Image (tube, rainbow, N blue to C red; front, side, top):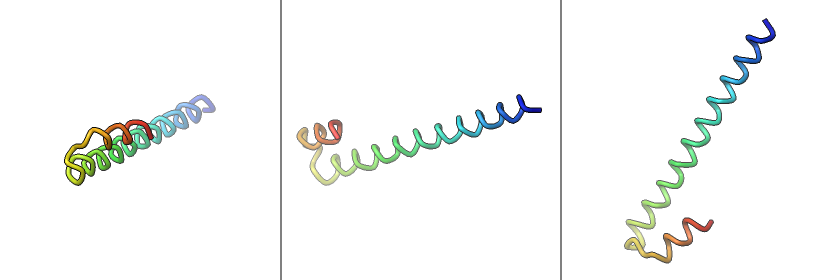
Length: 52
């Protein structure tokens, strides 16, 4: 029974990590869209987006 609880906890942690990565990618895509739409895809803004 203890091994089942450990497996369940690993599954939950794995799901949380997947959700976190998905949210980070969505956030990056959001700001990339700002650079593309609001700043005419200027290279300086791309550099700042990648750097920070």
